[in-house]
Amino acid sequence: MHIQGRVNVLESSLPPPALAITVDTAHCTPYDWQQIEILTYSQAASRFLANWATYLQTLA
Image (cartoon, rainbow, N blue to C red; front, side, top):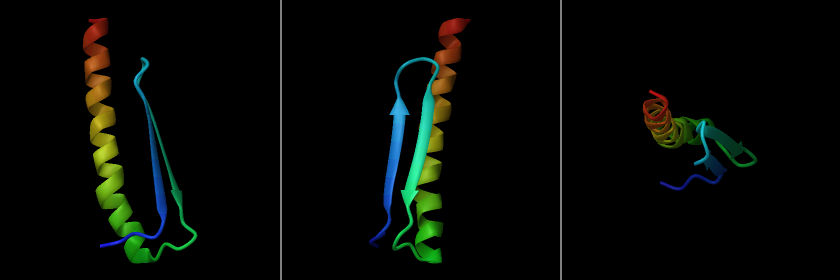
């Protein structure tokens, strides 16, 4: 599978954790959007939540 749109995931390691996702949709089809959402957003969100869990533990 090849997604023609470009996906940028920017993650900050500085506390508190930050996450920004931008998608270049110039050549994305609706199917591409679905794949982007499933593959990229879920993976990035999982890492983001894990980073927040680690960050909150350091505050306790």
